[in-house]
Length: 149
Image 1: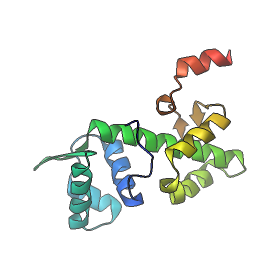
Image 2: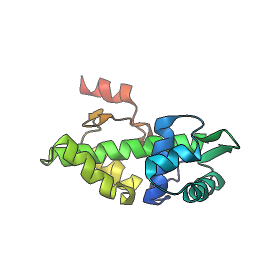
Image 3: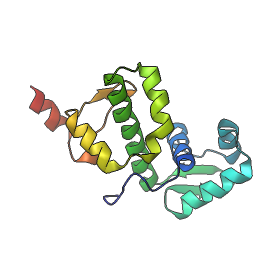
Image 4: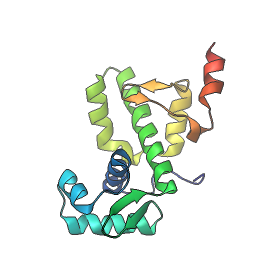
């Protein structure tokens, strides 16, 4: 997904991708519906759109899971959240405040902006929410770690 901008999906669809990533394989519509507080028909429509875009697999009567493309996008979403949370934490918000604030706007921040922020922060490997992967900005951990020594 080299041509990914990070702005391909709506905030709601991003939440579905994150939830599927967190839950793993074969998540049922009713489970997503209960977690999101949304009618199952709304979930089915959105998930089918994600499936037609190549992010999600649908196995009838078994549930939904992420495709390789969906997994890659989920990794970017996690990285974006962690970079932005770390940035807000750096500027004085607590870890909890940072995560909550980022959740309100992260869907509108491009991959290019995240890569620029990450670069300006020195490619941190750990944020307030956990480990930060750098594969999507073409920086491998081993290279970064050797560079720090």
